[in-house]
Length: 506
Image (cartoon, rainbow, N blue to C red):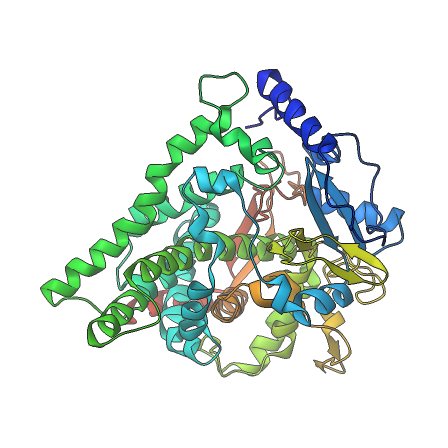
C-alpha cells in the first residue's frame, strides 16, 4: 500500500513552515567545515523527493559510489541524515565514539502509533543484555533445538506451506522463552499479533510518512486531506497495547495460579518482588514485547533467505550436506557442539548476502562532531548502510559480492580470519541488535537440521518447466524475499524416519 507524502493542504502547510524556518535568523557561529557530500538539496524539502518510493539503502549505495565517499549527507525536510557506507566509518563513529552516537532519533509516526518502546531506551538495553548476552543465551538452546525439530516435522507434512512454518519456528523458541507460554501449531494468536505488528511497523519505515521529517504535522487533524498517517496511527494504537499486554498478563495469571514456567518475564517479575531493581514492571513488559515481536519477524525472514540461497547455489547445499554426512553419526541430527565449518560459513553467507536489516538501526549524534574534515551536525540521524557496497557487498572485502558463496569465509576448510564476520547484519555500536546471540544460534541449529534431512530445489510446474524465483526483496524496514515456490523433499526414507522420530522429544 503506497501513500502520497507530498500533496494537498498538508504540503502547503509544510512548505510554509519550512520556509519560515529557513528565513529565521540562526546561530552564526556554525562551524565552517563542509558537510559530507551528497545529492543536491532542493529548497525547503531537501532530498525528500530523492528517496520517495525508493529503497533508501540502494539509493544511498549508489550515491556512495557516485561521490566516491563512504559517508554522505542528506537533508530530509530539515532533518540532517548521515549515511555510513563502510565498516571503517561505522566502527569509527558508532563504536569508538559510541558515547555521543548512542541516542535514538525521534520518530513522530512511531510515537503516534504508540510504538516508541520498540526503539529501545538505555534501561531496556541493559535488561536485554543481562538476559540475552552470549552466556545467558545458552539457556535457550534446548528450546531452540526442539523448535528446529518441530519445523522439520512440519516441512515433512506440508512442505508447500514452508513460509508459514518458518514464521512459526522463531515463535516456538521466543514465546516460551519470553513468556513461558505454549503456541498453537496453526493460527496461533500470539504469532498473528507479532505478524500484524511488523506489518504496521514496516508501513512506518523511514521516509514513508512526511510527519517523520516535519513533526508539527502530527497536530493536523485526521479529516484534513493528506493526513492518512493519522488514520493508520489510530488503528494501530490498540495493536500496540495488545502486543505488550496480552501475553504479559497471561504470564502474570500463570504466576498467580502457580502454573508458570521459567521465562524472561516470570524471572524478572520475581526479581522485582524480592527487592529494588534498576527496572520496573513497565520496562519488563516493553522488553518482552520487543523480544517477542522483533524476533519472530527477523528470524523467519533470514530463514526464507536461506531457502532462496539454496536455489541460487545448489552446489553449496551439496557441500554442506556432505560435511554433515561425514561428521554426524547416522540416525542423529546436528547439535550445537558439532564442528561443521562449512555450515558455519553458509550461515554467515546467508546473513551477508541479503541482510535482514539493510539500513541498520538509526543512531542520534548528540553534539556537533567532526570526522575526516566534515561537519556532522548535532541531532543528526546517523545510520550504517548494511546493504552497502562498502560494508556487506564490498568487492574488496567480499569478491563477487552478489553471488552466494560460503567458501569466501573459509581457508583450507577452516575459518578464514582475514574475512570479516558479517556482524553488520545485526546493526552497529551500542544500538546493535541485543538478540543477536539468540538469533545466531537459532539460525545455525535450524539451517544445519534442515540441510541434514531435506533437499531444497526449484519447483517444476505442471507443464514441466522450472519455476525460477525472482531473487528480489520487499521494500521493508526488515528485508524479506519476495515469496517464491520451492520443492522440499526428504533426502531419503531414512531421513524421513529420522524426522518422525523427533516427535517424542520433550
